[in-house]
Length: 114
Length: 356
Image (cartoon, rainbow over all chains, first blue to last red; front, top):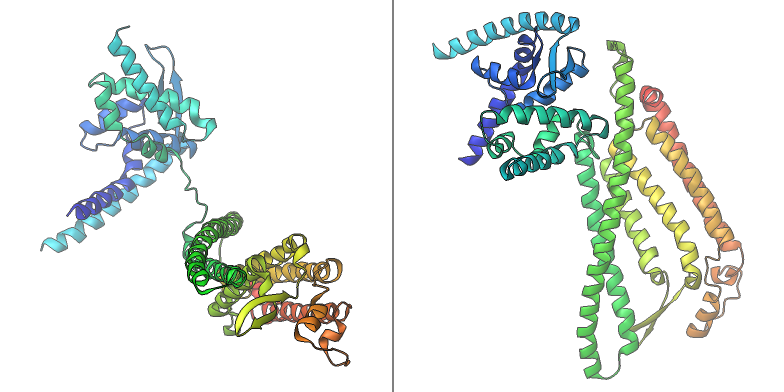
């Protein structure tokens, strides 16, 4: 039973992993710092663990999809991320892809119900 | 600052340290700042303890930060690695038992006297054999594990490099697809395995019980001792060369096993191994004092024999004749093997020979 639960948890995690990049990119047209992004995504019903999000932000920055800047003026230093021009272009492409994937999936799963 | 604040800051620092010590040095400072920011933000709604528990195991956290999977031996070689390790461990076990038994029996022949001594001796010898086996087994297994891992780590690195090179070449087209290797280009797995086992057992005997190569002296059907054909007094000097030769053969055989068919890597390995093998053989046979010069004299004394005829091998003991014959044999066999490998690579796997 415990094994099944673990397997299910892994599969859910894998399923969500692919959507993470799109969800993160979608929220970063305006500069945001990490934890604000965590809260925002959670409010919108797409929760993401901070220990997944922070490394992901770095990776996306390394790939050139995001850029970051430390804001030192506030009470404590904060790192703000936002999409680059490349990030904008990729995000648009990913949105199109996502649409077709979700439509395809929708159709598949409906078939199963009928 | 209150005691509670101090404690929380200390906890936070401990946590952050555990994450950043696991990631590359260049990124540490920045990630430390990021984590400070994150944890402070999270603490606005919950306690430090709750936050750190929510963030979970710092080791797992750090893993997310490392983008590349670091392998010593990756999935591509894993099966071969485990396979070779199994063979190697079985051989280590066999040779450990063999050498302990031989040493045990040799020891017995000196202590054997009356019946009770033999009975006591047998128990002692069994204990000796067991402790000897365990000792050799532990040392041998660790060496074998290290050696095999090292070889596979090198193979893995090379593979990664050729992967990168292929990626840089970018566009892949159908004509870059290598043809199926000719059936005759496949290297039989069982041949390689037999080769590995043979190399290891033979090597183990030469390392642990070189006296097995010799004339066996029996008295009343009891084994007494052997007259070794090798110069065991100088064995410490000779052995490193022999071990080098065996290690080389072993690596070559392993490359054959993991590649599974003739290709450039196998061909180069065969040429390099063969050449060094010949050089080592010349050193061992012609430069080093390999033979027990007293062998034929001792045989004459113990067995009361005379070797006068020209057809008798022992007649030539102490001269260069035997070394020369063996050396010639080694060179011929090595050249034939090299030739066969080169021929088969160029004949049956030309594409693999050029590109891999």
